[in-house]
Image 1 (cartoon, rainbow, N blue to C red):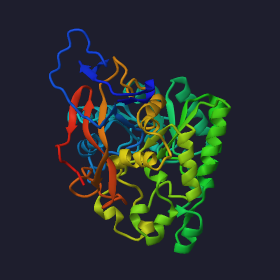
Image 2: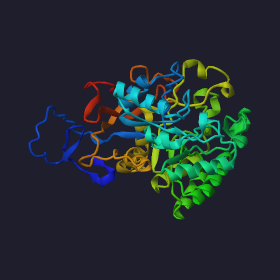
Image 3: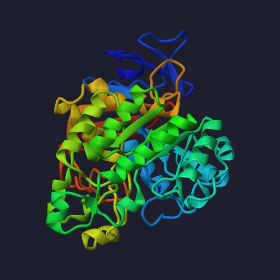
Image 4: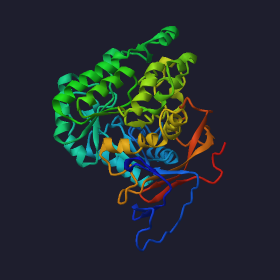
Length: 422
């Protein structure tokens, strides 16, 4: 059992009752198990928490649904998902936030936490009713990939969020510097003739936001960092006690701009894949805890979304089911220890969101992920559950396979004994 929140890494029995962790090691008085699960050689840890996963509902059900994607999440050991506000309609009213939660509860495969829209309709001009969104269950607010009209609007939004103790999630990118870029501005984009996205599109947005965060005191989280310079800037801000946290997408820790050499639209992403230097700094940021969470940045698409010239395709990767194995690759490569890797998927995101989950502490929600770190499997139609097939890892071998996922004390996924073995 590995519970990074409590520094536990040992063999121990977990007891579950009434949807919560009832005890560790020793059975509570009067405890009688309805079922026992024996998993020798496997890891039992808190259920994974994904800070950014687009479920495409409401509004884009032709790409995916809450039912299809939370099922995929359960196959990947993910018990809690944060849904960005760029649905259709946007999550800018309590009604939309409650709709997402109710549909997820009806399916019963994962907890979905709606992220409220920072501005009405994500148009970047009028602030949303953040207090009402918080009451409806939004743990944070964000403008997703949409820009705000100007810096004054951003400042007022930060002040409003701070007054209600709402976390502000920022995907840092200056839209004017990004222009119509589709690849990292560098040697590869120049060679391929692709319009570039300069590193400064990210770093200028980070610098701008940090100044306002320090002024307003809002709790802020930078999501899906991609550049070494941005990691350095956030590390310095944290040293100066500015209340900021950060995450990185799992694929950014393994892929670089070199992956674009074949013009494969599956590598068309926002933010773009950057250099090997950027990738190595992102990995070090996880190790030194400048970055305390790894997310999937799940963006499922229908097949046609990737069937065009590179620049004309829709960006994004379907990535719920590769979140755990891609993070485990950092362990296999010596970049992180196993407890550190699990922390970036459990206790790290839980602290960012102020959740009571992400730990196996008695009394906490009984959300568990049980996986075999040595089991190999191939990403293919037999092992993939998401409706989005847009992953560049198709056909590749992954190591580390979930065998059980438990949500609030209920087993929501259980693999057959031979399922997905290589």
